[in-house]
Amino acid sequence: MIDREKAMNIVSEYGQEHIMKYFNELSKEEKDELLKQIEITDFSVLSNLDDKAGNNPRGAFEPLGAVTIDDIAANKDEYINLGIDAIKAGKAAAVLLAGGQGTRLGFDKPKGMFKIGVEQDLYIFQCLINNLMDVVKLTETWIPLYIMTSEKNNNDTVEFFKEKNYFGYDPGYIHFFIQDMAPSVDFDGKIIMESRSRISISPNGNGGWFSSLVRAGLLEDIKSKGVEWINVFAVDNVLQRIADPSFIGAVIKSGLQSGSKVVSKAAPEEKVGVLCLEDGKPSIVEYYEMTEDMITLLNENGELAYKYGVILNYLFNVTKLEEICDRKLPVHIVDKKIPYMNENGDYVIPTLPNGHKFETLVLDMVHMQDSCLAYEVIREKEFAPVKNATGVDSVESARELLKANGVKI
Ligand code: UTP
Image (tube, rainbow, N blue to C red; front, top):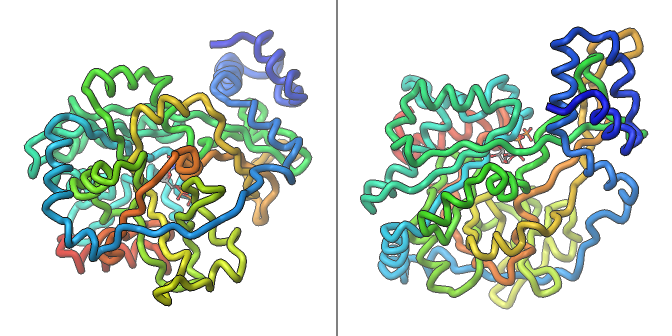
């Protein structure tokens, strides 16, 4: 661990000397806690505040078509066989992004530990493992699964998998790795303190998954296994198909560099990122970045031109990932309610946003690809995200969808 002098150098380099204000008054444990936090925190994100307005300028958007549900049905056998061959040859792996804090769900453990079952002991992690097991059984091949956690939820996650015996998965094929943390700042750019010995840090978004995986030494493992394709997916979609042979086969057949599962938008205004082209390269335009013209634009078939929403299920090629690994992803600055220590030393949970967090996003990796296949899936069969406790994309809606797909809950 770094010492006091090194910590002082880091905080002064970034104009954050207030972090060390109480250092000499802290107990040994508190000192260690603070030094450890300073060590694992990526302070360099703070430089993004200098040019907040000019951050992440966007180019010219154009619609991008997809292989549709009908196209896929027509080529089903070919896609599936190509995918099965690739999986049997050890060319596919999966990465589960489970480092988020799941604040909207309001569950104080890692989101994957949430019990989605009602009468059954069925957990979110278990749904995902069950879905992946379908492919393991079909291909008679274990698919390496890399699980990204954060400093905040790693121990709970690892312990949970152990306690549940990996839900029947071969533990030799499961690897955990920890993502980086970024500091939270107030609106004046000063890092927020949660106590005299704790700075406010949180996982730095899901965009850093590949660099964190490399730093954890897992790229060697991936390469030694001969993996060529990595399916990256979110923790919260309990219906998603992972390492889906048809998806893998379709991307290989297309000769494109990457793939993204998409669903047709439920309505033009649906709040979902849309896969499109930006300056000729694949890209995801967020719903709030779309103009009214883009939202309502129709193509020659009378369908929405910007029609295909992403569901955070991507297929990336390892060679390309290695090539772009050192390129910086744009950092998104988001306003959040961040607990802090007030001038009396009390811990306060604000009711309104009081500062910024910094995040990189996996969707920005799509724009670093030369090409991307949009692969349309049936929403009711493959998209049941658990974001909120109730309402849209909630525990309730996911339970209904699981039942509708014959999963015993
Ligand atoms: P979300 O954008 O839904 O964020 O993550 P979240 O932190 O889980 O939930 P809220 O917004 O606080 O309610 C989409 C996916 O990316 C992962 C999440 O675990 C989820 O699978 N993620 C998010 C990370 O792995 N790391 C992060 O820093 C953020």
